[in-house]
Image 1 (cartoon, helix red, strand yellow):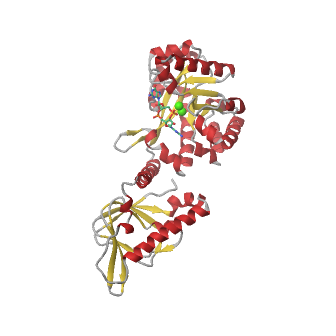
Image 2 (cartoon, protein in one colour):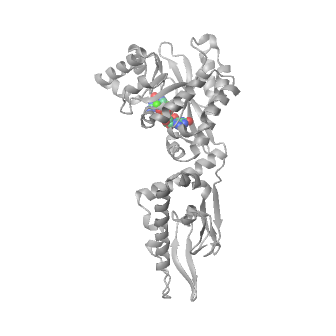
Image 3 (cartoon, rainbow, N blue to C red):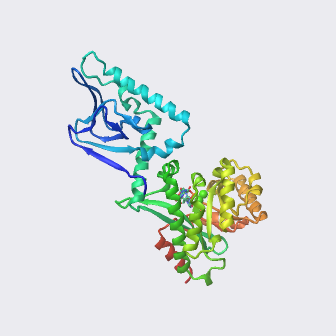
Amino acid sequence: MNQAVVQRLLQRGDLLFAEGDAGHEAYLIESGAIEIFVDRDNGQRVLARLGADDLFGELALLGEQTRSAGARAVEVTRLTVITRDTLGEQLDRASPLLRHLLRVTLARYRDNLRLVGGADGSAPIASPHTSTSALRGNADHDLTIRHLRVERDVAEAMRRDELELFYQPIVRLDSGSIIGFEALARWRRADGTLVPPNDFIWVVEDSTLIFEFGRWALKQAARDLRVLQLAYHPSQVDDDALFCSVNLSVRQFGDPELVPVIQAAIDANGLQAGQLRLEITESAVLNNLRAALDLIDRCRALGCRIVVDDFGTGYSALWYLHRLPVDGLKLDRSFLKDSTGSDRGLRIVRAIGRLAADLEMYAVAEGIETPEQAALCHDIGLHFGQGFFFGKAVPLQEAIALLQRQSK
Ligand code: C2E
Ligand code: CA
Ligand code: CA
């Protein structure tokens, strides 16, 4: 982990920083209260009293700054420290104009502080201008704070090895036999609760954590695939050796280490490259065509297969299927949901199945929950399926047990 997540506990009266100190960090108040104050000839002036969910000290994140006011705890206070390291890379990547606008905005906010704490010797003032309290309840502000906390927690979870990959079987629709697995991330909190990826992946994808997370997932999936391959009896499974699908998010397209990591993971575990399949969503491909194409080319040069995930949800422009060298499609489960009730949905599934067959692509129907849906997909010519009917995503040991049961 390269991003230290720091919390700080202050006792009542503790000074966090004084006016004129060099500042390198901003803070989020988790609990307690902080007073922002300035020393003037006629004594100390309190500019603001901040409480839980308030952010302060943020000018320091934009570069070397001296503090324009002091800060101290007025009760026992817990802070999350936001360092330049946490935000530095994102800020450095921001355009100069954006950085400048941020600086101007924050400077204006600081000037507000000075004005409110003016020289007239009046009583301490806590003005809405002086604190982010005024922003509370504002959707953007609340989302930012939630984001910050999830990011902090996920970084911590990665450091503590609390992330795991679960495996959901992908089966042949004619025999029901397992031909591979999709690796799906889970976060097992210290108290044992499992957090599904939809609750944290969006934050990981929005931050630089995604590089580290993505590399971890690929390495872990390759190691686990080897274990799975060794655990099952190939004679019972009539296809090539078992494969594993790993999800790639669009931000990983920019990871210079991605392809070397994949290569190393394949080599280290004695896999054939084709046994590692990379799932990229249709919208990620369509919105980032150049980067997607570049990545797809490099991964295929290694021998990995590329599968378009959530096929049909990206306002499909079918032209890309013949332009992009992809090996397969995963038909989004929304079609299947519609297909049982509506003739139209069914026809779409059938047409996509035919399209994939004509293009000699591997096609998987996702989200098969009932035997009727499984039979239907098979009847209309799809060969592979995935869904709760065949099995949910399970920890590695349970996936091994599934294979062993199958090979009996
Ligand atoms: P996805 O790639 O489309 O994965 C399929 C999701 O559908 C999984 O949810 C799976 O548990 C769920 N699912 C499978 N069969 C059924 C079914 O029959 N019915 C229903 N209702 N759902 C089914 P999960 O594991 O919660 O993952 C959600 C999403 O999180 C994934 O969608 C994927 O976009 C993302 N994700 C998961 N793991 C990773 C990862 O390692 N890296 C990246 N970048 N994204 C991941
Ligand atoms: Ca997927
Ligand atoms: Ca999917």
